[in-house]
Length: 260
Image (cartoon, rainbow, N blue to C red; front, side):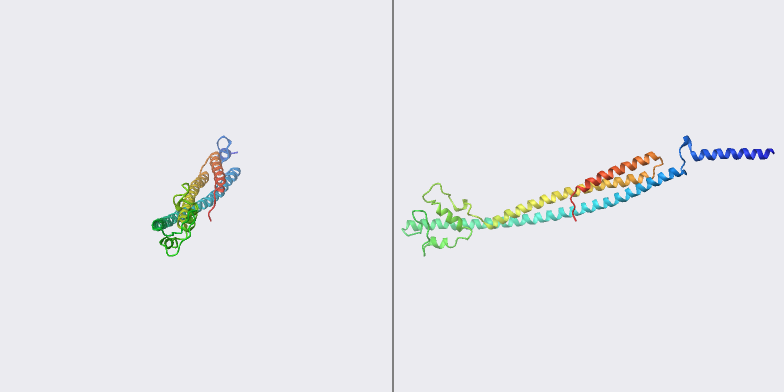
């Protein structure tokens, strides 16, 4: 065998050994071209892609819900403002009607007193009952009492306030004196408070969905970064953190109320 052939054979042997070392890598770890390493890499990338897609969908859902609850908040505050305005209007009307009733009642008292001093029959008997006498000023005023005042006035007269010191001083202190306008004002005020509470709750729901949107965005970030790392353990670790965060955030979102 010639020296040239011997040299060629030695070079081929050394080349084979170097190729084997390059394929196995340092310390016997699989090289990037190793089938087992490639399969694991593809699995990590597939899991990261699925997690990234799910996180994107749930992030969009959370953003949608935050927007919907923001609309509920705005509408509720607007309705509460309208209800308060209606309550104020009805309360003003009730105050005006009360002034009218008080004025009419005071005028009736003056008329009865004037008729009594003049020795005329005012319709008010000693037993506390009242029967209007036609043609008298007191009868004229009594027949013009507002319908809402009549039940309270009759109950006040029945309590014999002219002889019984324990009787109510005026009809306006009795539960029979009820103004529809005041009841409407109270109802609108209660409605305004309920709507304000709804708005505040909607604001809290919207904030909760915004927070979960941030969490799911973090999941998407971790999942995307996990495919860029060269170290296999670091990839798995970051992907695991993303998966745990996704599961926990999803469990929290499922407890939130939905607005459709």
